[in-house]
Length: 312
Image 1 (cartoon, rainbow, N blue to C red):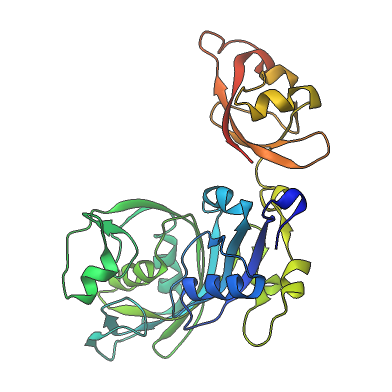
Image 2: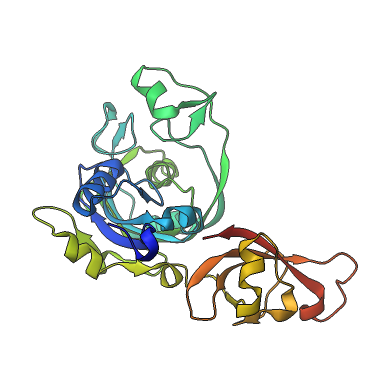
């Protein structure tokens, strides 16, 4: 399958990863349906969890890193009184008890203490690397290594209800946050253990699980193509900077247009990343606004320059 001029098509798919599938399983399924090898995802979802998995197809794989930073939302259940090797219900049970459950108000207060910027120690069962080796591979061999705590950001942590040992929750967080670890740290405030027993990624940025494409069963390629999200739309969270037609050739030759010739859709600041849009509305690349030395006190149009990050 190729686009005009023999080029691979470029678009994003919002697919729903089934529980028990790995993220790689979902990507492989999309590859088989579309008969395209150039497919990748924008953020691993644990096998036991289901929900939104954004897949980049064709030329859109070059832009996947700019979708990884989107805020993510999860809904799930944690089981108090059980600690597992993986932090979820599928892992080896390391400790089991019948806990005295905290009251509702105490649960809500404990969740509030884990909002904002917090420190979190990544789990051993994760895709992070230690000396070039994935942590989960070390964990499978029974090896535990020290992991430095990292800063993560939890925008919202809500307790939706509790029944017996189970506590339902909803989390909105930034990239790099481990919900399994969040559940363990939450229970630790009461001197208890917990693991995540159910987890669904309900949203990535503006992409909702209600709109995601199911991959189970017979899925014709036409069904996926009908739900394809064009690259400019997939990156709509980034500002739009339109490049005039007379600068297109120079841009493709690697020359950045001056900031003053760009048509911008919102004020920009030093460090902002934006979409470079052609005169006909197509996405032609990505750029970054940079402060021009010695011009910090000038109007934005004179104070900023453009660094080209990617040309498609």
